Image (cartoon, rainbow, N blue to C red; front, side):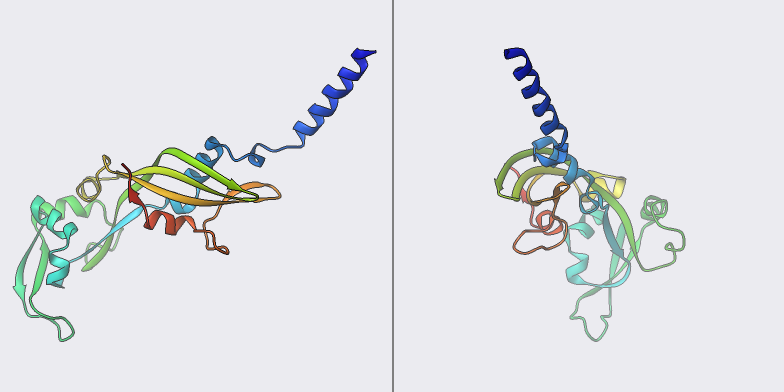
Length: 199
């Protein structure tokens, strides 16, 4: 008498389990997969480089100072445009800077004075915590920049780790990371912008 009832219970249990999707349960592994595969997280970090007449504030920015230290750009004091307070600089790529940057530019950008250089991408290190409340969840995670080239290596250290908090929402087909603003949830792009250095 016990065997048929055990078989029925096993069959019902299997039917219930088969109706669940792996995305129905927000595990650390699922959260990591969803964050790492999101378009926001995978977006390449671009460095905007401007040559020609630039403000003193731009010329003394940390990124420009790093390029100057490497000998890739140099500048001489120049006359400022009417809307910019002096002093200004005429920033140019040095021969070494041209060799370094030229291979990284999109076709047709070499003649421009302002261009984007792909510098780094994000790498997820770990999910450090999940807090769920109904069909909403907050996932804390750590990540770092991975430089894509010499310029990226000057701008972004892969040794620095950052901590962010991503919002998740459960839908009829399972959990999803919130990439755009929805109600009070923090979208992933804001979470990455507001990242704090991890301890």
